[in-house]
View 1: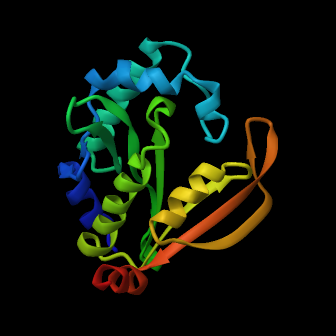
View 2: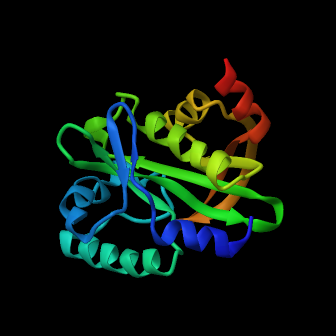
Amino acid sequence: MEKIILRKYFKRIPTIETENLILRKIKVADYNDMFEYARLESVTRFLTWRAHADADYTRRYLQLVQDQYSDGEFYDWAVTLKESGKMIGTCGFTSFDENNNAGEVGYVINPVYAGRGYASEALREVINVGFMTLNLHRIYARCMDGNRASLRVMEKCGMTYEGCARSSMYIKGKYTSIHTSAIISDEFIRNLKK
């Protein structure tokens, strides 16, 4: 996977439609919807970033995201409800390992909309882009110890649990164990044929 291909694709991040969702470029106008969940400690306790202090902070963050999109350096989609257009989270790639043709995915869903299968519905489409459009070989996801909901999303999307790296990341003042699940392109294509 070449950096130039990634930049070209994400500079004009395409809109993706699923049964219940539309995945699209995140807009500055989404700041109130994002702040609804980004302000909650219950959401950010399993993330590397801290809760947003106020809606203006979220708005400024989304302004920075626009510059990253312009450079092809931001790989997340807004997860929006098809019926209302409301942004309920994000899903996309957090990083790429060009040398090994791999990508890490991540996702956040507003807890008001949790338990309805939206995270796995969005993630399946992002994985599809990774394998079918970006020609990745391996896609993986990581989560902090205790985040069972995230592990369930990974499993629903066909990922295989690979293990736990004990106390491997220093996050918010403490060492945290990190769990990893992954799927390989051959497995994904086999699952498509079922």
